[in-house]
Image (cartoon, rainbow, N blue to C red):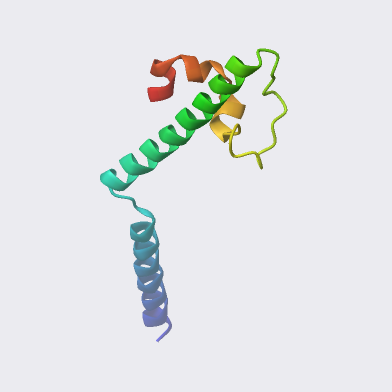
Length: 92
């Protein structure tokens, strides 16, 4: 009886683990869409920053809070503004 209960528990854990792993997988088309959406958001922020720089050349984006959706993007705040001017870095 003990031997059977251990195998049943192990089989149950393996089946549960299988479903957890399967539920976390993302199809290639969904992943591509997620990447394109993030790239689009970065481009919007870059364009907004470029327009603001053209209006006022003394403007600084160093201390922008994440609540400001017009000028803030996590990737730009982490990597830097040179991403906006380099399309190769943006694609990578």
